[in-house]
Image (cartoon, rainbow over all chains, first blue to last red; front, side, top):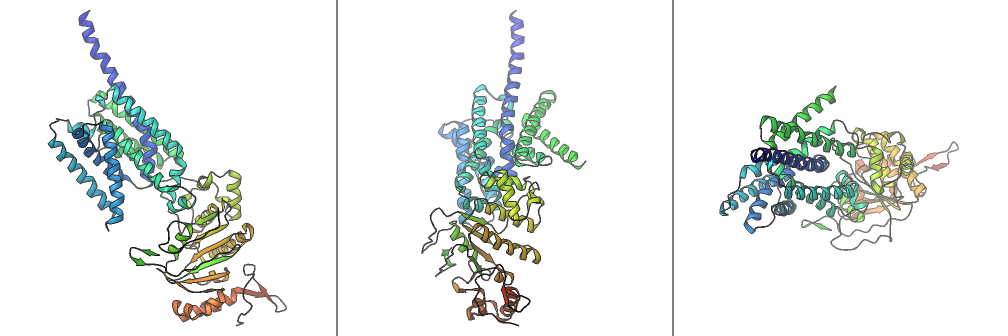
Length: 272
Length: 247
């Protein structure tokens, strides 16, 4: 009897962590798709990448001053985003140069600061994600964040579209464009913080770029593109987790590989 | 108005009345776009003030709209975004700019002229009292330009709105406007098109040759003759000065 219980426990908990991983992955894919559409439409791919790099700075500070790491990531992303706007106005440098400076120096700062703390963290899990270690508490955080972000995205959808099409036209028509752009940055920062565990900071942008890029092949309206991007993202998460489970491959990279395969499929299907 | 320590505009006085088409012309860097942004409230003047009628509804047609290929969006959805406009209103403004057939087209598949019409339609959605058009005929062929200018005049008549227009082009625009303001960091000269085209400041700014070709052109298009030789004003030009040269 006791033996039986001992054998069953790992079985149950394994099913549990797979389910938690699946739930976390699907939740993140749901918001990453529509939000990623804006990243694609506004050509902010490199911007997203920069914010993702700055997430490590957030983690270092979070550990240093002992606050919630997700919150620390969001704060770091926002700080870097605001710094970017400031630098763009101040320096006569192209945006991609400034992004490069910010991305790599914030990553480097993060690593250096980490070396001062005596906490021994598993760096690989932050860089490439560690979906299989998602705890119930992580899941609650992710669910709350995703639902909040989806609601905000729904409310401000048309306004976000308007400023994406023409900022000054939007302003003349009475939109507070500064506030809406800030909201977009906040949403991107939130999604980055939430997807750290899923694909890791080095692969986060792919979750926001590849599903919308695949969806573009089929969509004829912004809403259809956003919805398809969500679906494709969910498929990628399921496919990646399956592969990870059966082939024992790392979960984050497997999800990105399956997204890439879906992108290739969508391009081929579209040509026919 | 000073930007980055450089004086862009000074001593500007601009007045637009109802049902009046005012055209800003001037060379590159004259501050035309800056002035338009000040009127629109996108920039605050460093000195001086702008007084707009209270609750003035402004329609704005930007210089160009760049739609990224990655964004699938139909003309209908684009026009809907303005003020969540209803389908009937969208169809009405499209009809007004003679682009009804574009309703379901994708925005990024439109030609330059079609896109300008759609932008114009969007500026009409809120039934503007002042319409601001920033180089509205850019990238449109010469026939299309003439059609667009005729369209502006009919819109002015229908909506009873004032129109502030920016233009590079010296030819067609003169025949389609009530007042011309010639801008080069300050107001060089202003007045009715024909006065301006003979103004020394204007001649100096654009060079005599170009200005002369304009004067001739303006002559051809400012009025036409009825069979008995009476001068008949074009529909656009109902308050032109009486003096005009006959070639």
